[in-house]
Length: 440
Image (cartoon, rainbow, N blue to C red; front, side):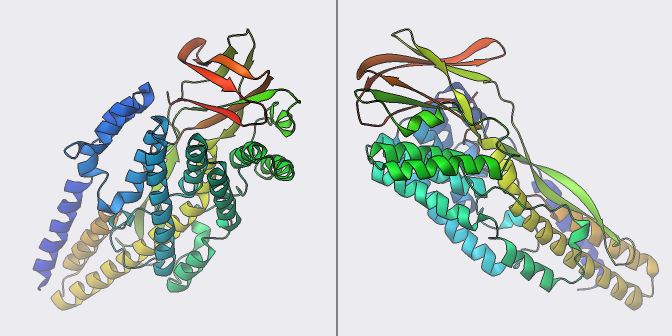
């Protein structure tokens, strides 16, 4: 191919990327259903084969996203068995995808990370077990619940160093890469207060007091290890979970509020050791951003006149942000290494063009088009599940066994945002855990 042909090809690629750069908001109908509590409508929009979400978002390379989003919506809709199936599928695919990505490191992804299968973020990998443990609880399988909590804790043991091998491989393969010029930070999150709280309850439900005490201590340790995440006091009711008075049953309430963060693209420019115009390039990186939250506090009211507020146990949005740091660091390295590879090829092609044509102007044009291709072809991978909640709030009260009407009120900006009523039966020496959700 002659150089004129190369120019035409480069221009064609450039405009092709421009044509596919934009993506309409395919989530609008699903988001509306989730925020309003119409989970059946949200599921219908998600599963609609002809809808925008299935056509543009939930494609074959995004199976993990599909199972995570549908699994969470099914959980909220009370379809616990179906939710378990989806979340377990997502869990298996995340594990397989991570193994594959580590073995490939930077691999052959010459365009951007969107060309590969979505592998899931760390917080998705953790919370899939939290909600599957609740699915098992709602299906009267406390042993299954505890298996999920133990799996989550095992994952946390590897969270701190899981990316180190891949980072080393990337740095070894690209000596021109200077990590000191790149925004990188490691996550300090290594324990989950939410998982430890649920572990306490599930172990108490099967009468394992020693394990209840261990998870109680680990919950406190989670707060002390990650003050950036847990900047709220430990809920006042947690200590009361250790022992329920004889002749009484304990009502535990967990409320999930708001929606988890999403990703947006941000750009940074890095200097490169090549002649102009390939001496600088733009790299596109995913940035996790919070979504607007309405709920500010939650109150539980019983028909016997008793009431109590729920306390924040875990800011799940903050966990998402904190655990994202490590995967973000790997993404920065991969993206910068890929940009350097593209820029080096462009600079080399520009030199050849100048020599063979004896025209510095043509060489500059080839280098310029190469830079355009390098920058336009870099698009941040902003894929992320959308229907994990943002906050987990908890509380509890000891009651005489019997039937009670319970109302949970979600408040925001001084007004009632959402209210839900349930009739519940409090049993002695049993776990009486009730779950409420408001994603506004």
